[in-house]
Length: 109
Image (tube, rainbow, N blue to C red):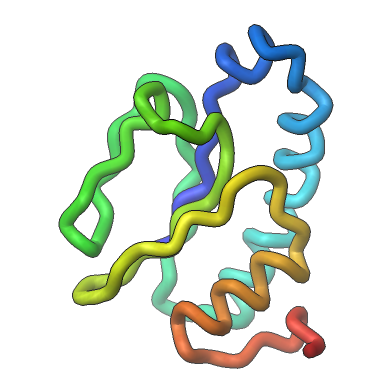
């Protein structure tokens, strides 16, 4: 599972609306990468007030998270990986390829 999360209220209070806009912009290509390159990986998009149970046995409460926006990569039996801040499609593809031990044409390293 990959969880893209953001706390819109906290970001607006901190004057970080542009960061949220950039985050949302990259979600579309990230969704396509997950569908194409990581079959079996579910991408959830959650906001403030939502609680998500992760496959590694932990939970994410966006409102109580230290980070106002980011992406968590999680799998059963593995320590989760937190990608903080805005992630480009390239950044996400490379992190997900490493975490899930798969290749992605979007990561051209």
